[in-house]
Length: 124
Image 1 (cartoon, helix red, strand yellow):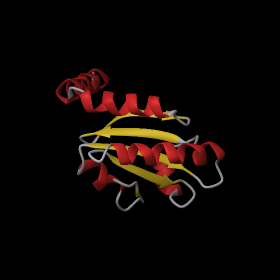
Image 2 (cartoon, rainbow, N blue to C red):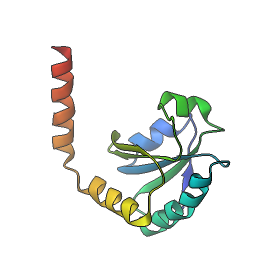
Image 3 (cartoon, one colour):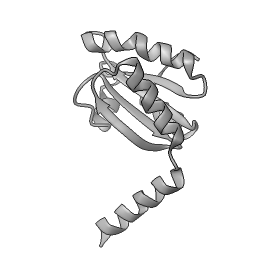
Image 4 (cartoon, rainbow, N blue to C red):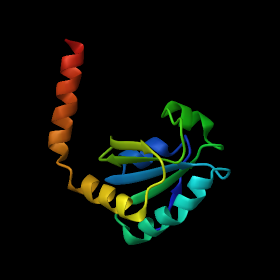
């Protein structure tokens, strides 16, 4: 599968309508972003079951601000609509592979229970 470009208009639907979504926040002027691009594209080819999406932070400043992107590249991973990973910095191929493996292996019932428990604690 190839990478898809996301905008403010289709970001949420892409996250909620796909099981696993990996998002690369980047900009054309960013050297590390350009170096990470081929790694991300190769991962997209190797994992057709995972949506590999890119957000151009220059073109999508409102979306980047809403997601509090302060450094690029930043990689976010979503599983079943839940943000499960967010980290700035380019990743070597093996680290991206490990991330995808871990995201796919998550027990989402456990993740949702942890989120609910944290919300309950915060509300108390």
